Length: 284
Ligand code: C5P
Image (tube, rainbow, N blue to C red; front, side):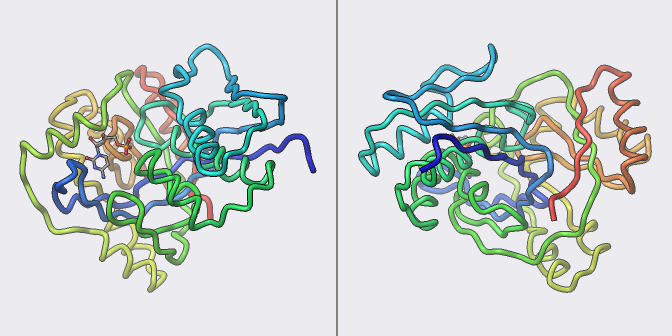
């Protein structure tokens, strides 16, 4: 049996995010097409005599708030494994940005620990554990281009989205997902979903249809809560992005560009004005 295993944990992007309403459990019923990006964290899991250790620099959340730590505890609870595990986490995905960084790490930890320890959990069992950790974790276990429903636990594979270069950009502020959903409740505005249009375009292999459907119904809420994000959106459009929409609940925006070269130029401009930026593309 190997003593260690290294895996990548890619970020996710909501190509669409439709909020269908508030559920009795306080969560929101979602319909979204989620997409794996090339931007990824790296995790190395190794066996140690006992306990759970998560290492990775000074900015790591406390164990009780750290989804990798919680993923391993949930796995212990489910399978009763007693051995020790150390996880080295190398972060590349921005934290609290709407890109599912913590969720990607948790999903990678679940599936890598399952392999390393030979626990033999099925994908279905892993998804059952994933949904307890967070709404985006089930998708992160599967990856690709996926239709996601419910609270994030209903998954159907879709044809791959076309390859797209993206600049991700954000002002230096953090935003609580719960606060954005609360503000959505107060706004109480139900809009027609874009997800079905996107699903149809993906099945038809119609790139212009895919681009036309890119959207996020949390965006008006976040732009109202954070005028700095609204200002950034205007700038990205002025600087030539083809389409700009919100990642998850924000505050990061995704800007679609035609090529890596255009992306580098756009990212440089945004960085010169003090925004944090990442250049990436969809993983197909
Ligand atoms: O599941 P996750 O930890 O990502 O969600 C963070 C918060 O966002 C939840 O506590 C909830 O307030 C809100 N949320 C929601 N409906 C969803 C996902 C998240 O209301 N489908």
